[in-house]
Length: 318
Image 1 (cartoon, one colour):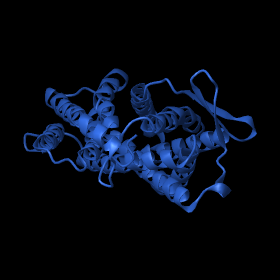
Image 2 (cartoon, one colour):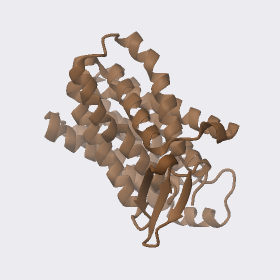
Image 3 (cartoon, helix red, strand yellow):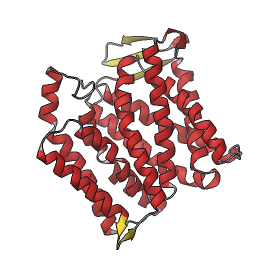
Image 4 (cartoon, helix red, strand yellow):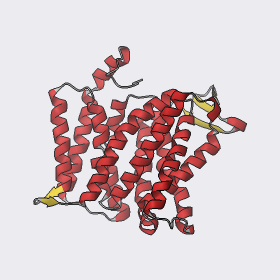
């Protein structure tokens, strides 16, 4: 695989046998991140009818399968030329992707999209707080935790399904690991080869879980539907996020990801008519504001760490 410049500001990554993937160097990473969020949440909303037909785990497994196949077709990863470190990074990311996506889609099959995404966003918030020593960061972490409490508890009882909350928390841990690993995979591979390896591993890892959860996954209509859903999530957003993370730090990435719970709640209402109480809207707002302020207050620190990176810094900020 080779990387060439077209002379018009385009970076063109050429795969075997003439297949190419091109993207504009001039596209701001912020727009790439926003595009990823819209694609993820639109794909999640449109997946709900398919999940009701064959279940959230088989739906996720099929999406991972199709996304792995489609990306491998265009990228043509050269497995024989990969180092042990590249294999380790790619495989680790694949396992995390499988775990994170299964947990998230099980969560949104049990609780509304807005609360599920807000809880999941505690993962990126945790990444943004790594190494934080300021009192403000502690206050913001408490505010985010308070937001989750507003989302999940009301009148001494769970306001949403408790098991759905557990899966959303598991997805949050997976998202934190995903951001850190995606940064490393993006730095270890050219183009989208690393993502291709990760999605293939993810599809393999998710398949056994799918058959254990539900064996009748080969219904024609859902099978076809998951091909289109695979493009919306995870293929397009993961590719956009990898490109974005090559141009920005993990903490700066967090400020734009902080909008995702709000986007999720809006699409959940518009597409699925999932109504939220004022308490739940307030909880989502707490998570969004805490995450955004955390990223903003780290801006100066990030600039310093770009000049003098250390092992406790941003894990590859660029």
